[in-house]
Amino acid sequence: MKQVTLYTDGACSGNPGPGGWGAVLLYGQFRRELSGYHPATTNNRMELTAAIEGLSALTEPCQVALYTDSAYLAHAFQKGWLAAWQKNHWLKSDKKPVENQDLWRRLLDLTALHQVVFFKVKGHSSNRENNRCDQLATDAIREMRARA
Image (cartoon, rainbow, N blue to C red):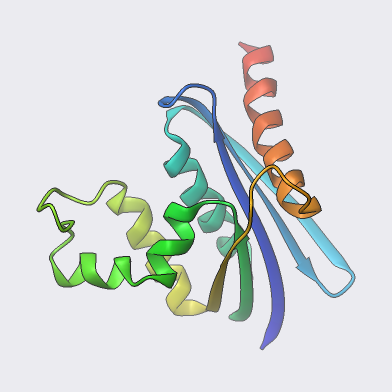
């Protein structure tokens, strides 16, 4: 399997509000940057969308090291939240429905295709690729606002 590094980030101008996401895929000497926009969303939805879009861009099963500054995304996998939610029929420990189930389910489908390990990085600090993803996400929001 190819070994790919994926950095992701989501942003929202207001929460909820207009949102953007960014992803950077690295494989050997190859680099691919992706970004997108949604007119009315939340920061968490953009964080999940960045991971989904990055993984969806892969054309074959890969070993993926996914770096995110989203504790929501990383901890869902690292701390077993997703497994618990599924076991409890998509209810949280407080018996309320898990938010963003549509995106979590899509992400689970993608992580079944690839071998993905999630890493939590500090946001808005010295991680160059995480900062680039943040720039891609915020640029997507800014570009769409300029067109409106």
